[in-house]
Structure formats: structure tokens, C-alpha cells
Figure 1 (cartoon, helix red, strand yellow):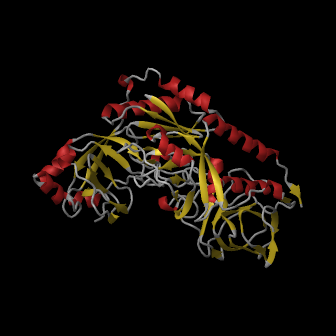
Figure 2 (figure 1 turned 45 degrees about the vertical axis):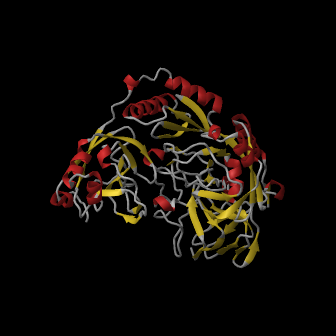
Length: 306
Length: 225
């Protein structure tokens, strides 16, 4: 690691089965881009990548390997020459890879052949800085870190055609499964919530994205803390929704109107401050259908040799 | 008991509107049943005061099957079946040097510091929930006389092992962190150690007793002041 960038984190798909210790899941904010990065190299779906928050990364290869960069659009160079994202490249020892600052989207993913070889903690390599768990010593990547990888180059190159790539704009429609305290929000409150645009604030991190817009109030005065799932939309007393992301606390005591489906959290994660989002209620069966269709489309999409 | 949707791959089961030792024991029994009968489908379980969040593997099951399996697993969940939980004793060095809020709690209650310490020890607590931070166990319920509201201004730094009270809950801080609870002592037992097996000495549903130790014993057990 020659220059770590703003927030570069080693990440597999997340830490599951450790909520009973109070450990959160972690994992890539945008699993779609993460999955493509691994797929481009023929990696295991859970192989460890780097989640690059906002960019500014410089790496030098000490061994021969292959890489693929997906997610947020950023100027990328290999030994000073511009390279394309969404395709694989071979690296020779001494090659320098640079990922500049994102121009569209906020999170890029860098995969290496076979994944980075770091010791999992509680079954996962996902870095959760708040818990000091995962990655290298539970922290974001630092200048001079050595990132072990050992599989050697893949040799044949593949790319994902543009038609198959996500587009990172400045708005998103977030589909929500109503749930938790949904019934404690009156008709007018729900109507407001599902019919107004919210602005993404600058108070967004891996724990939660705070939004700004129409106030929404529930009838709940005080409630017992309870388990929080991915994407849950918390509405605290100020009436401004917070969408809880991968590093959320496992329990909390604010009313929740429902949960954003993971497919749309991936889109939300790529938005920066000032972007606009709106919510759409869908039922659980529709949410499952979306998951299954997305999985099927991922499997069906062919990579092109290059 | 109500099973409600939480998210695309999660249901939440509500057992009661209020928490109690009985509800906590029932939730633990539910956790055991679900773990036994639904192991293949389950990703994570998050028991809390009066609810249980069930996160399932959407690639191995679907919401119809999971909802049905939860209902079946919890059918006739008798409170008699409720697990007693393990009894874990945690040593505490109660003193003004280790518990800077002891004096204030005593004053508020109109009793002596010794009485505050005695009242905190006399109760057997249940682990109602684990969260906030790795290893942070919410224990209830504290004797009403020494229940104290959270500090208006949270401390920037609460030491690891701090034994604390907030309303009728008590807890041991597993790591140095900011915190707004009232501090009454220090516990030398590590509440969360990622390198230890198990990583936590307690789990949800377990019963906890606190036992006063003196300064020398606290230091012997590895405590730091």
C-alpha cells in the first residue's frame, strides 16, 4: 500500500452468525459491484476485496497477480497508463496501480485473483472499525500495509459489457418492505413518507445514511430496544429517517417504518450528499422476487473475453 | 406472541409489551427451539427485551417457509420450558475510586454508599440483550432505589470493566468507550475478548450475580485502576 486513500477497507461479504456477541455484519455497502469484482477474476463469491471509499488509492504489486476494479467510476492507471474498470488485468511485480477520486458513485471495489489472504475473525474478514474487528487489526488500510495474495495471475482477461454495468446517478428509488412499527405510523405519515423526496445528507457512513426532508412521526413514545436488520429505516423523534447500513448496531430503540431491500441499499450506498431518494412500499413476495431475479440475471450475464 | 415482517430476509417475533424475567426466559427457550429446528435456514438471531429478530438465508429458504417454521417452532412454547440460564458470578471492586457516581446515587436515594453497593449485589440479574458494542450485555433489573437516569452529558471515556447503572438496567462496559451510564465499580473479568473461547462469559438469558471484592483482589485478578 503506497497511499491508502480516504477509507479503504478489506471486506468479504460480511460476518454472519455473530450477532449474539453484539457484532454487526459489516460487508460491502454495494454488494452488486463487489460480486462483479470477484466474478471478473473467477473468485469465490466471498473472496476478500478492498472497498475503496471515495478513492485516492495507490498500490504496488510485490507479486504477479490479477486485479479487477468495479463500482464507483474513478480514473484508474496501471504504471501510469489509463485502464478500464469492470475488466481484469494482470499485474507483474513492481507494477503500480492507482485509483483516483470517484467522479460518479462513492464506493469502488478492487479484487485480486483468489482474494486477499487475511485471517478471518468470527468467520469473516470484513473490517468494522467501530468494533476493531476484521481486516488488518480491525482498522482501515494504512500507508505501507502489506496485503497478502498468492494465487498468481489469472491469464485470460474478461470484461463486463457496459449494458450490464450499473449506472451511478444522483437519485434512487428505494423499495421498502413495510415492517416493524409500520402500523404505528398513521395514514398521513405513511403517505408523506412514500410520496416525498428526501435528500442524502453529509452525515452518512457505514452505520447509517441520514436523510433530510418531510418530517414523519410515529405514535410511539418509548419502546424497548430490539434487533435491527439490514436496511431498517429508523425514524427518531426529529422525524428525519435514517437508513441503517452494514455496520449498524445490532439492537436499537427507535421506531422503524420498514426496511429497504438490499438491492436498493447498494444503489443508495453509491449516492453522495445532496442526492435525492424516494421510497416505494413493496410486499415481501415482491422483495423475494426481486432477489431471485437479480441473482438469475447475475448468473445469466456472460462476461466477454478481452 | 406476534410474528411481524422486519425486512426482506428477517422476521421479528414479539413476545410481550414489557420485559420481565419470565419473558426473557421464554425468549431464550424460543432461541433454543429455533436453533434446533431451523438451523439450515437461519443466519442470525437477535434476542432482546421482549422480542427476537430472526434473520434467515434467502438463498436457502423463502419467507413463506420461514414464517411457517417459526410459528411451528414456537407453538405451545410453555413458560415452564423456559430455560433457567447459567448463573455467572462477576467480581466487582466497588469504591469511590472505581465508581465515581456511587456518591451521587447514594445521595439521590437518601442512603449510604454501602447500602448502594449491597443493593446492587443482592439482585440476581438476567441478560436481556447484547448489543450497542461487542460484549455489551444489558442486565435487569436494578433495585428501584438505586435506579438512576443516564448522565446529562455522557463521559468521553468510560474505562473497560466499568460497572454501570442506567434506569433499572446495569452493565459492564466491555471496552473503553464513551458512555452516559452511572459508574459504581470496576469488574476485572473481560466481557469481550476476541481471542478467547468463548469470547464472552455470558449470553442472553443467563443469570448474573455481582460479588464485591477488595482493591487487592481486584488487582490480583488483573484489574487496572
